[in-house]
Image (cartoon, rainbow, N blue to C red; front, top):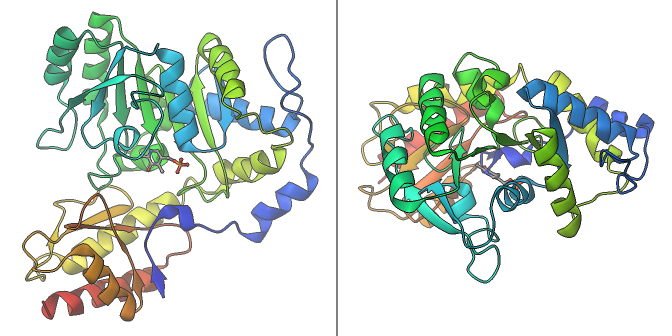
Amino acid sequence: MVDLRSDTLTMPDYPMLETILTARLGDDGRTDAKGRGEDPTINRLEDMAAALVGKEAAILMPTGTFGNTIAVMTHCHAGQTVLVDEEQHMLLTEKFAFEQDLGRLTPVCYHQDSRHMPDPDELDKLLTESGASLICLENSHNFSGGYCIDLPTMAAIRKVADRHGVPIHMDGARLFHAAAHLHTTVKQVCQYVDTVMFCVSKGLGAPVGSLLCGTEAFCAKARANRKLFGGVMRQAGVVAAPAIYALEHNVERLTEDIENAQYVHQQLSGKLHKVRLQEEVQTNILMLNLTDAGILADEFCKRAKERGLLIRPIRNQYRVRLVFYKGITRKDAEEAAAILLALDSEL
Ligand SMILES: *Cc1c(COP(=O)(O)O)cnc(C)c1O
């Protein structure tokens, strides 16, 4: 079975697991004057993450959702307005921030332009109209099919934000994929945002964890909020050690996943009769569009499974997502492409 449901399916390899056995541990909830805990492995991971993205500090979070939620609730007060992409994970798949009996933030949605990026002029206009106090970006963008925001656009968005005096939070669950596509470093991508969350639990292959990064002052507040939300994870050096291993060993290889996604796109381009492909594959995600295929996503995925390919509907019954990750080989990609061609030919 070729399983392309999600890059959260990556399994830790033996050397990664081995790091847990020798990790030095402590209670991350016992904090010093700067708010840092006593787990030296967590502290090492947080320093590493901060340096990588070029921010002063970082905080280990249990999940990406937790990291985004703490970020937004640290930037904003209940009742404030936030600019989010209409298809942003934070808006559609996360619960707290925009729920009117929980985080009580009001979302104002911006759209993607023809290049699948936010339009700085639209953000400018929406900020003027809504008086929003935060801009949220997602890079790479999950539901659009892994599209990235390029550096010139990031810089233009920064200018708009500065003009309005609002901070920018970036959901970088797949930040390292974006940097790979843009042929740059994560630090270059993150220079335009105030805070960024990235996941080590997805393409980077660690079992658990996300990092929220920003200034010392922001992170001190975010740490306090994380505690109030129940997100202090005591001896989570057992989580941090594989995360460190992931950052040291699994970043370069992300290009393999991107190449496999692009390979499948290439194999299918021009050969499908009913199923439509996203225009261009930039990272490790490939979306299929079934709008004109005469079959709904559930049924399509069921037929794929019968042939040995696990994929799943995403967002609605007309879209199916394929995600490539560590553990998926070129041979798996070939097999996936062959199965999709066969399925399409029978529609
Ligand atoms: C997966 C994901 C998250 C949330 O991460 P979890 O660790 O699953 O909570 C946030 N944003 C995007 C874009 C994601 O793909």
